Amino acid sequence: DVVLAAAARDGSVLDDVDERFRRDREIVLAAVKSWGHALQYADESFKSDREIVLAALAEGGYALKHADETFKRDRDVVLAAVKQ
Image (cartoon, rainbow, N blue to C red; front, top):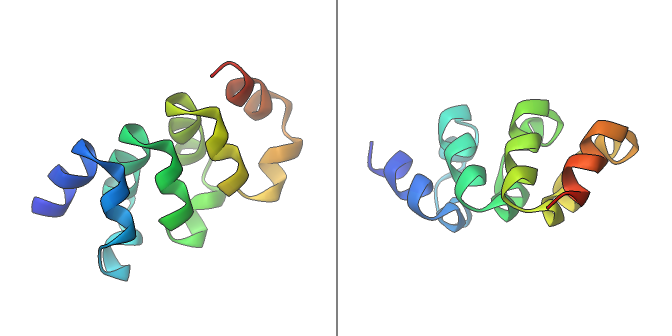
């Protein structure tokens, strides 16, 4: 899939793709792994998905600002963000 390959190379493409791709878990995961900030463009449901959020934080702790509020009170998640 072209969009998946592009997201894996440069997560910022999530900003420019159709909404259906922003709801695709595999594409969103690839995007946040390459650019944690891509979480801001993902479907809202992924902002509360622990695996997606942790993948984004592994790329850059600043991605925490785009995660669901509950993660901002989660000690393990905040520690993962700070380590970056």
